[in-house]
Image (cartoon, rainbow, N blue to C red):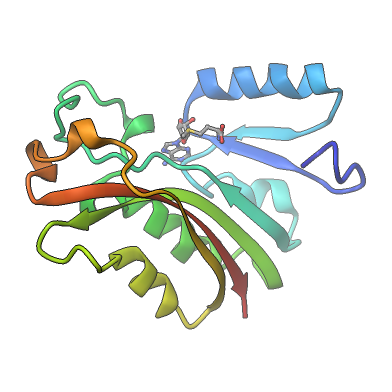
Length: 172
Ligand SMILES: C[S@@+](CC[C@H](N)C(=O)[O-])C[C@H]1O[C@@H](n2cnc3c(N)ncnc32)[C@H](O)[C@@H]1O
């Protein structure tokens, strides 16, 4: 983003110091300027913004729920939280709208658990469609069954699959 839009201010937010250090190195090797900040979702954003609105939010959050087969040792930064790992994604959509300019875009890449009892139902798609503050521009399935090894275990006992989706929302 910083390279393609050199006149745009770009901020990179993450909770994990190691991820931020790696991203800083990446930006420096790419020869671009990015304002990195340690932040629980958007918590550091007001300090970076000086009252301006954001035109684009891009997020690739964790979406695997804690209490899975790999849990017990799931660190906070790789835990998508409750609602079968959707909590962080839900917060990104809900809380992001207060920072986005009208017409601004939120791009989200996340995973949605499809339950065995309702294989044709995507609960996240239903939820984003119901958001009044956004128009849903695109909802694309990138992988229908991304983590088959998690299915049937722990909180995924009743799951059929975890599908990975890309979502484009426009602030109204
Ligand atoms: C799938 S990785 C994506 C890393 C990088 N942003 C990218 O797109 O390549 C998910 C990242 O979300 C971060 N993360 C998890 N929970 C977070 C939170 N509450 N606030 C900010 N970052 C969080 C993790 O530390 C991790 O680096």
